[in-house]
Image 1 (tube, rainbow, N blue to C red):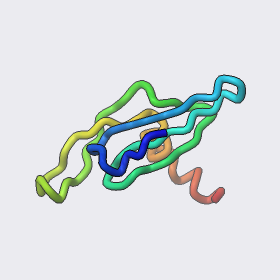
Image 2 (cartoon, rainbow, N blue to C red):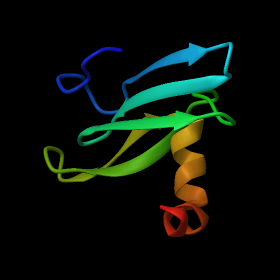
Image 3 (cartoon, rainbow, N blue to C red):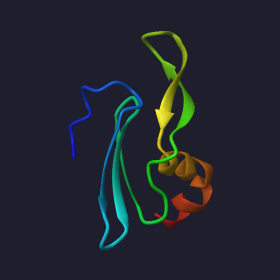
Length: 81
């Protein structure tokens, strides 16, 4: 998987293992975010509004499905950690 630390926000890289049906995803937000999923993948990409210190405003960036699903159901995921 690629090093995303020098990539622009919204950049995504992933690897899929068809034998185990697991996808590994690295997504660039303000820092690289790594996720593993066996039920959600990258597509469809959605738009998310995130604050940009450089622009001093909210900007729209691409967000993989697994990130938006994680954020939507975070209340059920975090207590299990």
